Length: 392
Image (cartoon, rainbow, N blue to C red; front, side, top):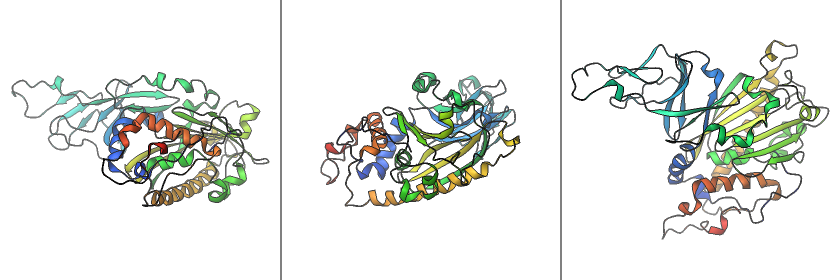
């Protein structure tokens, strides 16, 4: 939601993407492979897996994963697929598993680390060895208290992938923050429209009355303007102390923040589907998961200093209501955008210099996807299928 005070990062000729990028099941299928199956995808916080057996199901690139802490303390990600006949092993979205994971169909049983330890009636089967049938695994990485998975066979180490952010958020103590509220939103819009909407606040005066009174939409500056990580800060309008309904701080500061950070809110997108909002007294993170080419699941989670809930003046509900209202305003306008970009008359329009971050987001997306592979089949009349419409 940040803006650059100058236009130095804006590339002339940048335009929005053609409508098919937001409605085509074929493009979504490519995205699942080229974007979601090859990048680090956030699936929760380390606190979600606090004890052995604690698990969450995660949907990544159309796959169901069981993310669980094993008895040795490792966080694992197993494909939710039995090695016998492919049955889903877990159906509840979260919980605590006992010592093992058992298939509900034929009772094949696995340790929490994925090893097969029970296979009824398989004794004497020629060539069968339980050691050959562990659960299929995905890579797991951690960054600032967040847990990520990657489906690629040999993914880039998470430390290297997030190297541009090394130490950038240290003062906010992200790894130690406590999650206090989570809301899941079903949004009738393509996942990219949600990320693009988050990346600019030109819409704020008309869509977000509560936000505009606390965060002037022309304030601040961007400090990450190209690549997979984008965003910057906005100034908190005095005499307000934070982005809350009342304008008052709702919790103790996240860390020993300098004076300038006590008057700022930071907003970043972490490609492909994570958004991170940092305020002096609380943080919010979002994950965006495609449900279909025209629908998405957005998970929003509020975090505070671990000592905040026990301190005088704690009122996280003030921030929760502020962003729940703002979120729903955003989801509604994204749904209206979805309807518009599916019109036969929609054509890409020009980005303004104050939309440099969504234009940069588009460039990263097109780079990852390989834009040359996204042209419509020959012979099909598509009025918005000109190469010049790829964002510059």
